[in-house]
Image (cartoon, rainbow, N blue to C red; front, side, top):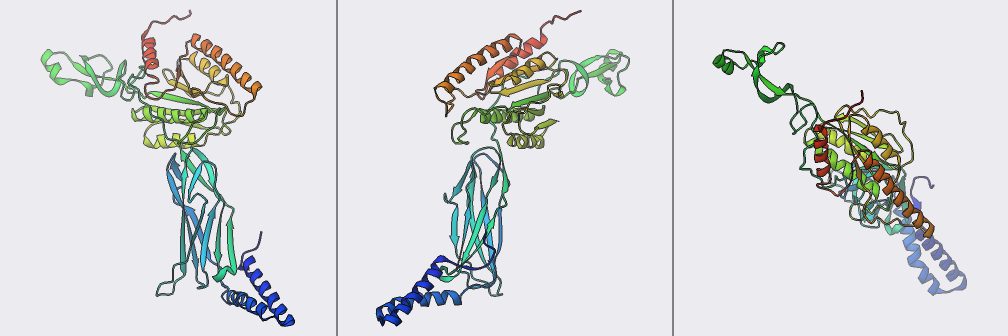
Length: 436
């Protein structure tokens, strides 16, 4: 790469060389017309040489935001400061990246320096390029180049910044809502009522005093009326735990960004974000675990708006891969937890994990995120036949999972899990058969 500094351009060398050749030919051949043609070229070449800038500009470039949502835009700003008055124009070029729309579309902008103020400060040029991210993920933005030219474009100075700024695009949660309550657990579940009494803050009723009750729970108005000690009982406080298991083994289909067709991983990540947002706003605890991702993505249980941001950040870092996790790795779910497995169900591993978890006290729901009528491009006749056979095997595996007692429901946005949650609530209160 050419070292920094002001270097003559091809146009400047061509003008000087052509003018000099024409002047020599005119002098030797006594052709005044050649001298006339050479005069403006030599004049421009001399003018350009006399106005060559001496000092090098100072460049500062950075995007306004490093974290965006799908469909949002930021601005790549370039500030060029130069104390030399012979800097005539400044241009910036930003190389396009995947799932990033530039404005202007070419990624090139040109402007002239603003004249120095009365104090004699440096002349500044401000350039901006709008960048719109159309898909979730963490991807680089750049490289970029800044070019400054002298009058008549005689000399050029260029700085190539190969450093890539990373932009994190958070997935936009899909539209989701559930009117059915989450299956009851042993304690207070966000907005859902507990099924047993205990230490808590929600009033349950008034009962007679029993050994072990705290004195501060005594209900004096009832006790004075009846002549027997009565205490106030409360529903037990206990957070409801929702574990989201994201299948990142495969990404079937082609992603066209937030404005076009979604791939299977797009649907999975956006559905996980919608479920996390829904349960966190209800006051539940949500954790995240991925299967098959290139890097282990795991978020411990938590609640609140800050935890939602953490879950979305980790979802934006999910990259499809084929890494098999240790099957003995615990998911950290306790009794009564709700496990939601989101997967296109192309790989058998998520189904095996779901059946294994269902054998414990956790309640497991498998959400099928394979988009309906998903075209798989790039397949020949043999590949299309193999894909059809795989879909038939997939149907057989889903029937086996349902027979094992694990519900499988297709992701269709709002109301996708209503019927499943109602069935889980009824199943929770049904009699069970145990082995002795």
